[in-house]
Length: 363
Image 1: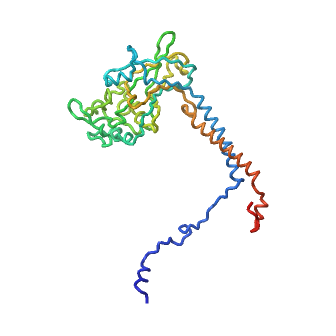
Image 2: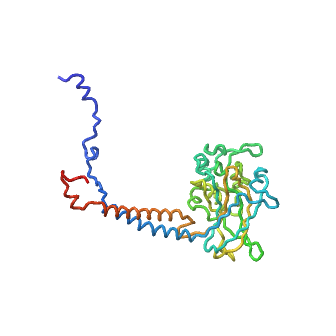
């Protein structure tokens, strides 16, 4: 007769897995045995494959022409020993500051030429900064109650009334607003390099992520105000081109795609190669960079750079990937050679490995 304790034991559900090959881990499996015959060829194949690829990447990277100008502390025009960074800080950015930097291109920049601006020590990847936007608003769905992610850049006072901001959020509020122009000093005459402010944003961003509200932009944004740090409302970003105005302004779209690292560059302009004198690129010679200096970076020990660059089959100048391939390939070859020497000098023959018995010495 079963006791109460036996009955309780039977009622307890067993925690043992079901009797199956999968749950009992009896499925057939391949367990590779790493021998010299398999490891050494792998090292040599990787080395032989990686080094030519790395050399090719370095070649394409070196084909890219690039000129970088740091204008963080450029000197204010019509002033003595006053930098624009100091000037806009003292005037609280209420007065404009202009500066010029002369530079020289030592070689021709042939092909498509692009202008970039670069920032350093600027953490666009901060979590709260990245979230500080209203994607629904950027799609043209305007409401008087922006997303709470935009706080504290969701509302601002205008004419004594509090209005929602468009576009709201910290990313839009910190939009890069320096104006950069390049002049060619041709025969003692300053000729502005013609540029295009379209075609600089990702097509997927402009076609999918950013949309303007229907109708006239000024009327659509009548109940909204500009971000605190902006000098003009969103519907005046490019009034001469309706395809590049409002939320679909490409300068805004480029800025809204946040950078992953604190030192980054963003595409600013494309040289217009349809104009006379610039059809094949930029010729070597003296140039002048003229800057309308508005964007403060010295407060967080940042820097600002202006970059002139061409491109290659693989994009811009980036030697890191090529160097990485060459280094990994070289290390694999060296390891393969070292292991091969050790294998030849210290390994036992196949006969010795097969004829092993209990009396075989360990040495």
